[in-house]
Image (cartoon, rainbow, N blue to C red; front, side, top):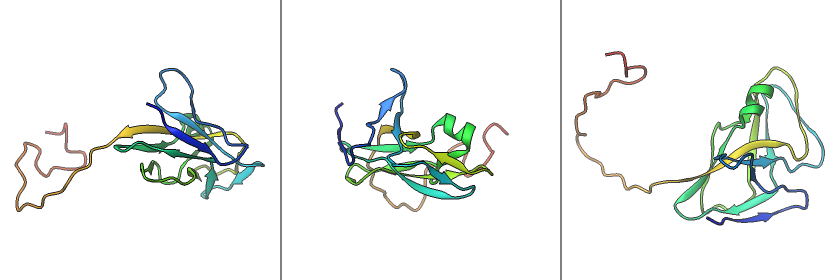
Length: 145
């Protein structure tokens, strides 16, 4: 699959995978100088790129495991969704979960993007749903019977 991508600045870094089998493409901070992110704060970090996602797909923006476990940084919305009709710059709202100021460096890998298919559904309102063995048992109910 070929995805059209546009660099919006001369310092933007195109997404790349860390290994041949990696599902995610690293997104990098397109900033000119280091950015200090205070504890409990969110900053929208520019990536300097926009992409044309094919119909039937979306881009999920996920935390990078190293950044979240070593620095306590993650996307503020936990998982971002970029729809196929969006053509603006990809921004990553990065949240500092730690109790320490963190510094984002220019070009630093800040999140990962995974291209995923989705099903477009039409919802049909009904009076009753079909019965299942689980029924309405919710949180923590599986495996407890």
